[in-house]
Length: 197
Ligand code: 5GP
Image (tube, rainbow, N blue to C red; front, side, top):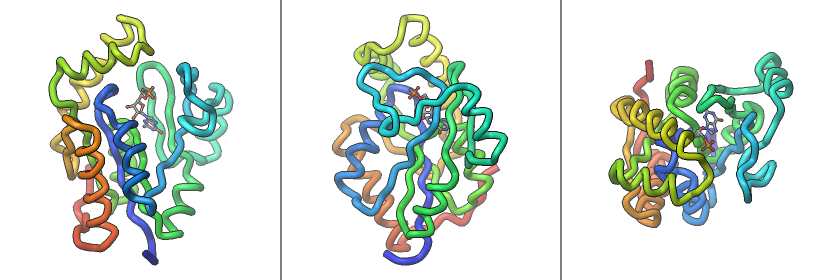
């Protein structure tokens, strides 16, 4: 595929399964490229620097913000997260289908900057299932889980501002749906001209 690629923004509550779906997506859509965010959060067990995130100090994050190195950034659950701008621009210019897995604050910043970006919301099948997944992950304390559930409620209320909603009732099916969606934009069968406020 030649020409400029499309920018897909995938958001959804913590525990909705965005990360797993995006990982599965790469097996189905080799032309897709997923951005690695920078964060001030500490790595969870099993998370690798440069793979899951680029883990940086507060000072390093400040430097990236000051130098305009981030396409967008936001504070989520007391930590800061941001998308490195340069590599996203380069991959888009190469014609890649670029995927950002970011929260709604960041999604709307990018939506305003890049009107042709495609906003996709990954929805858990139910609140009970979301809670079950958050607990199963075992990465957060009860208190942190409660905060994530509160954030989830606020995020789900924003679903109407997204272009597409994928319900993650089954990871394989949801990943197929995302791959199909990306394919249809890549082939020009779908396009997004609406701007996001
Ligand atoms: P977690 O700590 O569970 O990995 O991520 C917490 C939240 O931060 C998730 O909603 C995730 O999508 C969001 N997030 C991850 N990277 C970025 C980013 O670069 N920018 C923004 N705005 N949010 C991000």
